[in-house]
Image (cartoon, rainbow, N blue to C red; front, side, top):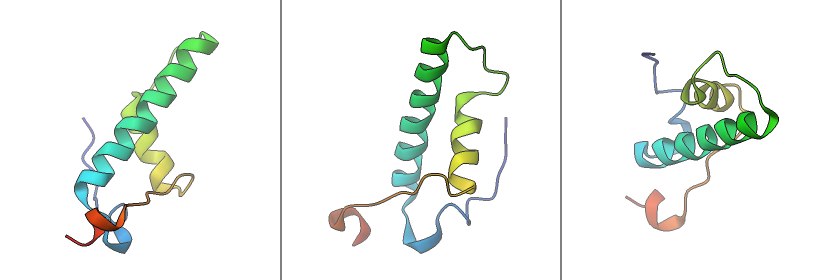
Amino acid sequence: MINIDLKPLLKGGISRYSLVVAVAKRSRQIADEAKENGEILVEKPVSLAIDDFLEDKYSIRESDEISNY
């Protein structure tokens, strides 16, 4: 289990809910791509997804409804 500091991921007022949803979607993409390509993942898809967001490969955009809370 990884224990990371969420502050860099929550920059710009991103909600924890949006972060969880974004990481879940990206980890599903990673797992599906690996399955399609017949790859065996050494790291868990969630860890890889979190790394993608930490390295700014992907960003999180919230709707106005969520960001106003």
